[in-house]
Structures are given as structure tokens and as C-alpha cells.
Image 1 (cartoon, rainbow, N blue to C red):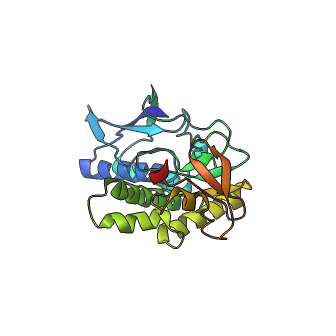
Image 2 (cartoon, rainbow, N blue to C red; image 1 turned 90 degrees about the horizontal axis):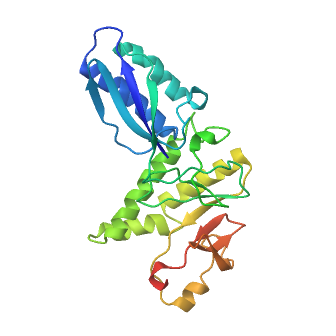
Amino acid sequence: MYVVELQFECFDNTTVAAVDTAVNGLMDALRYNGQVLGREFPIVMDEGTFKVRAVCPEQDSLHSRFHSPQVKASMNRLSHASLLSPKVKLLGRDLNSEAAAENFSPSWQVIYTTYVHTCSPLRCGDTLMPIPLYRLPEPTLNGDHKAVIKWQTEWQACDELQMAGACQAEHAALHEIRDADSDIFRRGWDLRGRIEYITKIPTYYYQYRVGGESLESELGRPCPKCGGQWWLDEPLHGIFHYKCDKCRIVSNLSWDFQ
């Protein structure tokens, strides 16, 4: 990933409130298209220029060829706040984040995230490196990838709750990321199908697994959708011990028995 700085120059008098609305609207649109990562984008005023720093998957993530209709509309609205289109300055590689995948047409891919990841939840199945969402040949839904980003935000919130394990909400959160009949599971699995449809690449969904009665019962745990056997002799990427090619689901051996 790379750290960039967006510089917004004024061409006329404006107000801080107008700038705040216009710039944050643009950053939200870029985020929901996968062009910037994270959720907080501080705005700094420097002698009449407004600057925002963000993390991008690639050096050219903010190129106009990747813009969604929502990003283009937000760019046009900058003039309402008397702002010019931003100048983008590449500051360098972010040493605390993962590099983006180099192959955008892998043999398979997987929807996988955790609460500590800010990168794209779409991962290359061959390397497990994140594939930027704006690299998909079509928007996921309604012109951009907001549905995927919103799903990821909710999944990560549930993951953080169940990892903390300090309140009753832990059980509800675990249900959402573990059980195939939960709202987040169903929505994520449906988004997986949409991505597979537009990319023509087998796309899998990650089922989080913790708990279980014993190691023996876990080894025989069936696929949550078709009930078939899906245990792998060798785990993929050291994480996925189960893989159902029919239902497009991967999972881990319960963390309680690893």
C-alpha cells in the first residue's frame, strides 16, 4: 500500500464548512470505490491549501480511469466549495500494510478479512494478497463497491467484538461471522456470487470457525451449505483447512484446536 497526499487549492473565497463537506464527500466516494483505505481522513489547512493524507492500494489508485460515477460526481461538486481538483502527491510505501496483488486474474479468489485488516477483502487465491476492488471489470452494485465495503466494516466489527469476548454481544457477533444462516454470512456469500459473475473467476467466501466439541468432530465437520465433506489434506495459506468447490466456501479448523 502507498501513502498519498491530496492537495486542494481554492480559486475563490470559501468556508471551512463548505470545504469539509466537499472533501469528505469525495473521500467517502473514493473509499466506497476501494481507491483509498481506512475510515478517517484528517483535513489540514496550510496557507489556503487543504491537505488530506490517505492510504491507497497502488501508486496509481487515484487515476481518473478508476473513478466510479460517484467519485466523478464528487469531483464536480468540489467547485461548489471553490476548490480545484486535487493534486496528488505520492509520499511512499506504507511499511505497516500489505502489498496489493500483482495478478488480477488468479485461478481463484476469496472474500476474506479480519478486524485488523484495512485492505481489500477480495484476495487472490494463489497468493492471498488483496485485489483492489476498483480493478474489478464492473462495479459490484449501483456503480461502485460500497456494498462490499459496508459488509467488510460490519464483519470486522463483529470480529472485534468476539475477539474481545467481554460482553454478551460476543455471542451475537460470533453468530454473524460463523453461521451460514446469519445476515452477514448470507450477504457476504451473495456478494461473492456477484463478484464471481462479473470476473468469471471462482470466488469463495470465508467462514470463521471457533469452538466445537472436539478435534475429532471438527475434522469431520461438513460444509455448512451442502453437508458434504470438504476437509483438505494440506491447509491453504496455513489458514483454510476446508474448501467446498460446490458451495464456494472455505474455512479454518476451529481456533480452539490449533
